[in-house]
Image (cartoon, rainbow, N blue to C red; front, side):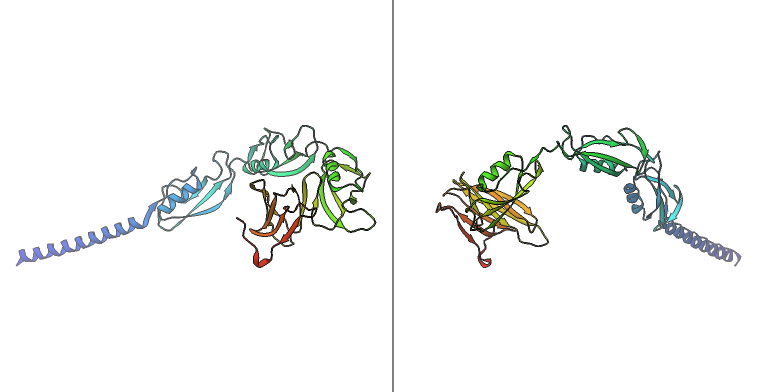
Length: 335
């Protein structure tokens, strides 16, 4: 019986050892699936670090930022746990992100458009300081003439840069010309020769003055003005438009009030050609003044937000062009 007993004892021990080994092996397999080795992220781009940790089943947490002259901006400056540590999946890995060097070299902004200069400063970690403007015979309007600190200087990141921006050439100043009693086309011609811009034209009916002449002007004659200034005229005429003697028609249309800009387009059919004379997003409440050809073969349509709202025809060759306004239910969409 002893040999049989010994065999039974050995067989039982074998089962116990085999079971223990299987259990330990299973634990190791499960543990190996739950544990990962933290990679070295220092010096790596933040986006790259995020992709690596996500692939390992780990979470990334930004613990803060710091200036590091040896590590580029938006790269990992430090991490916790450290590289090589074994951690379970779904654990957080905290990183600190480098802001780059604390000092930067001031870029050369002279000659740039002021909007482009603002972008360059922001990209280099600098802020816009005071912006002064001046006229200059050499500088183009809107371009940077000078800067403080100057190009090549070393400053702290976040410091401000003051700019001097050009306004173009010095405006020519002279006395406002006398326009009272002139025909509108003559008044407009004088404004163009004087480097002045036509502002608004208002219409009145006055029995003591001839029809179709300027009865008021703003600024008044003799008033000191600069080139490029707007001049408003008041004309003794009741029509919405003025036919000029030089084959042109001065068209006027007010954009209705509101909160949003209106897409206004004036399409002209003249001499066998169809083209858009005016196509802009007009602020509400502003008037549109346009010079269009005055000829029997000319017709034009005004579209607002894609719908035709006005039409003009010069087929009759009368002093007052045929004018029609589309009813709301008959408005046609712009082609």
